[in-house]
Length: 493
Image 1 (cartoon, one colour):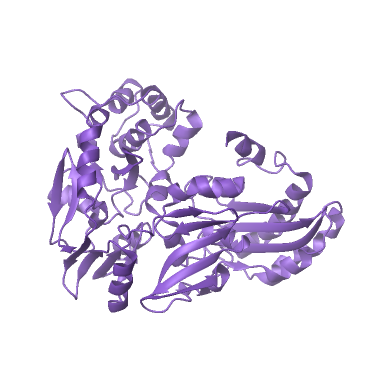
Image 2 (image 1 turned 135 degrees about the vertical axis):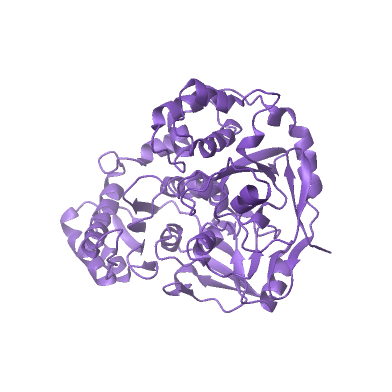
């Protein structure tokens, strides 16, 4: 069975939409079709948060709300979800608790950014974490830019409103919304359009493989956090879109004793806890991975398949010896992740082939991992350089090393010369570390662009080798980190 409409839950009822252009964004639908203009367009690239809305999906028997950037989310991606905008929050002539708190705390001036901030706080209001810390609020608001109010009153409003269990119209109607969303999950393939222009959402991996083999020129979309920019900034004339978000099985995390299997459509937010259990540095890396809106939409498989030289996950997963599973038609194959990246935006993937799963080996007792994201801002910023290290120890000596960097060249790649120089080093003899630090210059000829100079990247990479060795030798990070100190991260788990 093939459905020719998308269906989503809106204000307590099911809505069906058909006949839309595959490039239609959720923001354009809201503003131009529904005329819900409370959702604003600011940057049109998912950075400012003015367009934030909430999507609700059933997990564990309840509706789980997450913030998303409507400017770079395709309309078709709301299929099967509950869509909530700022106009939906007030009920019975009363403001929502988040809105009331923003008024009481004087959290708004010009008001342009306020709807997006309110929607981010709405999702925080319905999150399960209690009590709520100021740090958690800051993290939730990292994707919302406010140019005039200042964040202190906004954070105060969040702490005031989100400190108790939810008591609003959405919690009151929770059972009705769960039933409505459950009824939308029909397991049907979605195909809107014709063979020359369409939005499609296969419901199974087999349907996806068949459709993509027939249309290898189609654009695969998972979270759309990058493809969305092709549309809004690059004005790309994308005529065929295949959304992976309904393909059953690609959203599964498989935990084994020695490996972690992450399906291609698992979001960064969903993968965060499992990756953090492998190592605290992976948890901190995921916390700083874009904003909450980006982590809720963007996927692990999309970040890899995108092939960006500045993608944060690839270097970390390469250092951990991860493998990539790909599928074309009925055939699947597995390759080392580092072999996937061939050149700038070019991967070892034939037309019609897609990423289906990433397999990440867990650390053994004698292995040590470190990952460092270097950026101008701590939150929601693209890396100037991203370095990852895995040391296999034999007592106080490094028996083997795997080192990978992103942001240094056209692709993320291993530092083979550095790995060779690290093998055999004593953690108790810092005077012997110089050759490994110097070897990094033979592994990379860094990029020179607006994010940082080649000289800066080269210096940072050399220093990160020393930092990884120093932290491994001492076992502590208080003297080497401003944020992401491992003892604090481990205590919080």
